[in-house]
Image 1: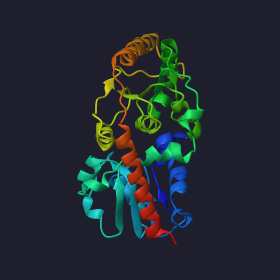
Image 2: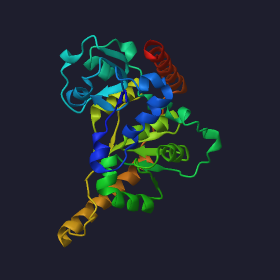
Image 3: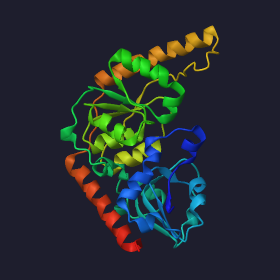
Image 4: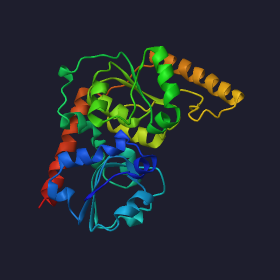
Length: 293
């Protein structure tokens, strides 16, 4: 298959992650079947995958086409980028700068197109949740039980990034506000015009957040939920360690409550959102014209 995205996490963990595993659906909907099935052209999709480790896995392709991917998570030797590489667009201006690309190629993350491709209409989905919290997938796996409990006590909907893709998008639409540690939680919220608040708990990579926020003309301003805690899944914590985890959980609950009550949510302007979406569609047409057989 002529597409590449970050798969090793899902394979190693035996679970899915929306931000990675949406790629086959997204790219399959956008691009001609001859490109998707190509042995010569590789489409590199959404995610923070422009680094030496990830890109070494596509060296075998005669042609590599980058579509809204982002730089990060490791070293990057720019000398690898010869005339077999086609940077159609990248996630944001920081990625473009790191790659020495023209500013006009810094469009945005193509996750902005997902709700449209899923044919989900905001008007047909009722609002059910005043606030929804979306953890990073690692936080969901390591601390999900405790996070769900504290969300329940605060009257906040908990949404795992490991649910099926359409369910994930619909649940975001059902929310009046999203508080999210997962960046694709913010991207989908912005795409369906739901205000969102970025937070840090267990996993946070500032560069990718700054990169994407800049692409939609929004400030990078993350709220820290404080102390990390872990679920006692195996039941082998000592009494002291268990008490310490519960204490930290209570501090996170207080921090999340404060964020919910006092932090102003973000949402890109309608004009910027439409401009970025239209630019992404222009790139899709260009790639199809250039590479479809």
